[in-house]
Image 1 (cartoon, rainbow, N blue to C red):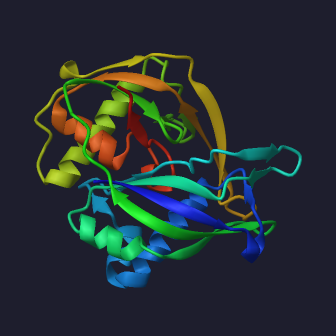
Image 2 (image 1 turned 90 degrees about the vertical axis):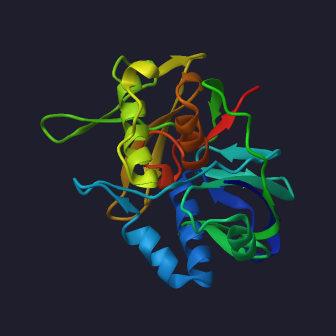
Length: 260
């Protein structure tokens, strides 16, 4: 289920300067808000997610970048100055407990902060709206609302972050969806790679994102903003839309919107 949140920017608290790399901090805000209502659920989601037999885990939610109508990028300071009074944030949840009533009750009127040691912005949740489901079909066009991350682990243990135009990308994308299907439905995915196709409709725009910026464990993840035409069974389309696609969905990557 997809939700649209309208957030008020409370400049009086800490100002309106947001770190350019804020996606990981969005994830932390989601966990804290869930924990405020149901600590056990948030702990389970954070520590375990859904686990495959090989130990691989998924946390089945995704979220967009903030949609900010008016802003200014301060490149030297690596800050984003929010000039709008309100912004939009979309969240998608797959776990069964994440019903409309649960999410609306948890997030409504919440106050939370996003930032780092240099600057913080406080937000107040003014509305939580359950969005209507799109008309799913076996061929759909999507645009990324957060960068699409496709990770290919090499034999030496290092990771390559692939562009959606790379020849290996469709296999990574759909194999990830097959794993997500098994986690969510508790059974092997009945679909085959031969039933699925991915076509990139524009020139992907690279985005190098700092995760845990400014901390000793800081890492850099590359994703791509782009538009995709996907051909796949409807059940996989729903998993993509509500739970994200590619890697690191619960850290701010792979949130999609349907393009009509």
